[in-house]
Image 1 (cartoon, rainbow, N blue to C red):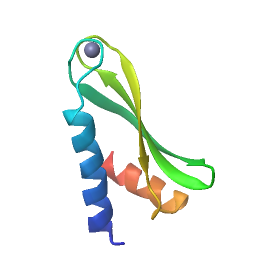
Image 2 (image 1 turned 120 degrees about the vertical axis):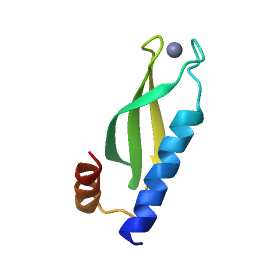
Image 3 (image 1 turned 180 degrees about the vertical axis):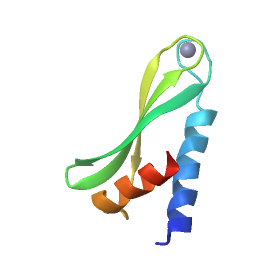
Image 4 (image 1 turned 180 degrees about the horizontal axis):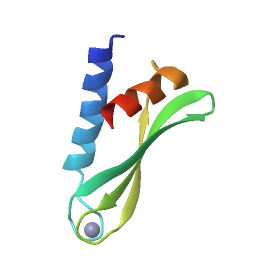
Length: 80
Ligand SMILES: [Zn+2]
């Protein structure tokens, strides 16, 4: 897995977020925070999002089986 692949993976996550309308008002979600968490030993991307129209908060979960926690934080830092 190269950095390029990881970037592509993260881009696809943002695409999912962008294409998901707010369940309250149908507005667009904005990614606020991206973190990794282990759930049953599987690393997950957890993306906290907030609706740009009504402020409704939603958590998006993505599996991230290929990234070590340490590397991931480095990549997130680079993205920000
Ligand atoms: Zn909304």
